Amino acid sequence: MRYMINYDLMETLRNTNQWLGATAQAIGSYPAFSMIPNPGMEWMRAWGEVTERTFQRMVVKPDWGIPSITGEDGKDHLVTIDVVVPEAFGDLIHFNVTGRKPRDRKVLLVAPMSGHYATLLRSTVMSLLPDCEVYVTDWHNARDIPVSAGKFDIEDYTLYLVDYMRHLGPDTHVIAVCQPAPLTLAATAYLAEEDPKAQPRSLTLIGGPIDPDANATDVTDFGRRVTMGQLEETMIQRVGFKYPGVGRMVYPGLLQLASFVSMNGEKHAKAFQDQISAVARGEAGDHDKHNKFYDEYLAVMDMTAEFYLSTVDRIFKNREIAKNEFTVAGKAVDIGKITTVAVKTVEGTNDDISAPGQCIAALDLCTGLPAEKKASHVEEGAGHYGIFAGKSWRNNIRPLVLEFIDANSPKTAKKKPANKNRAA
Image (cartoon, rainbow, N blue to C red; front, side):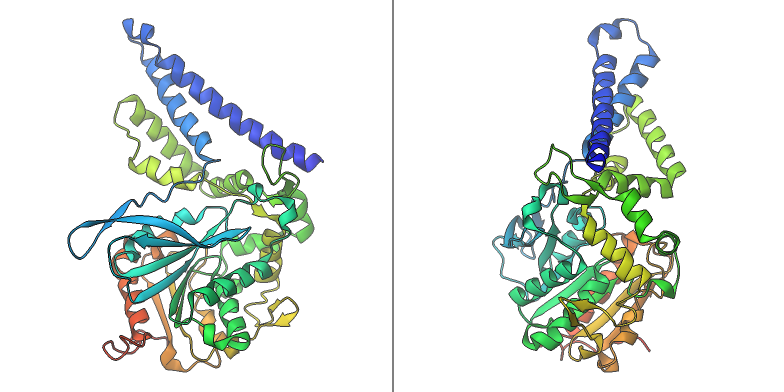
């Protein structure tokens, strides 16, 4: 029960800060105060506006915000989001571009379940839509899932991916970003044995911890320093009475956000100080650089306790994927069984979350895959976010990924060179 009290206490503090911000904004905007100009009142209004927006965004799932794209015909085509496979813990969604012929490239974009919503990949989706039929794993906030839906750990996550791949069929090209990379590799290996005809054509792993010990970061060091008992005692709480998932054991999004912010506390503090000054001067806007970033960064979701704990224990501490010892529902998953799916890894030299070396370890695990079906790319100067959504992705990585897809598609393989950037 005390865990539920802690959960509700965090929500109470968040709600109180949101209310204080809204109140300060209302007082600072009171028309009568304009009769006697006072910079203090303007600062109060600015502080209130930034504070209210900050704490309100923490419990709201961002919208995808992709109303249309411009097609080859120069016309704007509306984009609708269709739920293709509905599930309790996550849906497979399709970005349907109306009024255009289906694209030959069918891409399954596996979004991370690491505190943020799948909308974190918004810019990635937008960059792929003109050239691909894009499907995304849209994971649900655990606080909104009733306890009656059961558990959800990394094995369940893997089986969800297996179901999605089976549904989309063998002409699919899978791109996994960050956290899901090891489990996506395992899901592909699972299909290689259980249902070979459902395997995707290619698998691109971007900045994922296939072998966390290959190049240690603060994230992997944290997993080594703490015991599972400490994690369960300090990080796990029960969802409070306000949400449909009341009573479910979770790693709360607000607690995750506190961890995210603490890693670069001074940087975030300065960003908010600068934003308050900008609002006070009338130089800020709803869609300025600060709000565009923090509207997404502050929107966090709860993870089921079993998913979080099994990730730390089995992926980071015991390195089951790195050792090729992962099991799903009691069945051993042998990554060496992947023999036909082309695999590419992408890393950034400045990635401080999944450092270079962690992701490329996947190629060594694919012992049954011929060298011509293995490829890797290390982006110079790119950080974690940049390798899937930033300038490095748009200008350098995305063209390479599309080329890799085409090189491993029946319709375009003869027109494209083999994987010329393949790993040695």
